[in-house]
Image 1 (cartoon, rainbow, N blue to C red):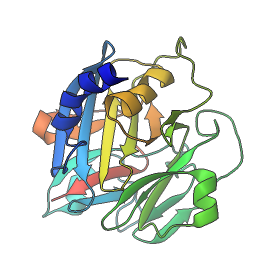
Image 2: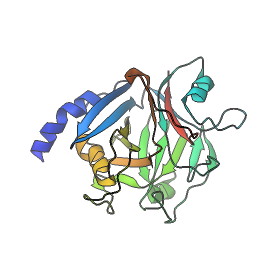
Image 3: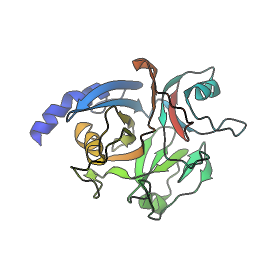
Length: 245
């Protein structure tokens, strides 16, 4: 464990997780032979929000429409932020600016979302937290914005119990992890197809984050202008998360 910590220390420092977080810092990282892009956000100072529809109720679906929605401000970072139905409705809980658009789902179900435990990414004006769904249901924290997805990747420092190290289910995946004090959120997209076990280990062992949530796979996209990156897809996305500056 000491050796692992020593290996990870430069990565934690570069991403701003070990110390005070910067605004939005995106880095290309290699962990255990796989490539990842990680974007670190200081939740105490940055305008980190969820987005789904414009003022007319039309699904935003992508970066261009999202940028027009936040104009004249600029979009510093964005990523798809949870699973959705064919009509782009959020699959589980979705709250935006205090308004609940879709309810919490606590039952087990098919697919990755229903692979319990799943969780909720909860934002306030100064915090960002990943909370296991049943814990969220018990405590009902006051989230300004929230999106539910699944499965959890890391729960209190432990990997999801269903993940297998040798699983051959390999996809490009994206997710979010949060620091124990809720001040820092790290959004990650794998740049190589990876299984859940490796993806979760990157959050726990590579980034040292105690809680992390899977957002989606295969359709995963990232907008990171500091890396000259704006992932394109033919189908519109559902919920989005972004930093406005």
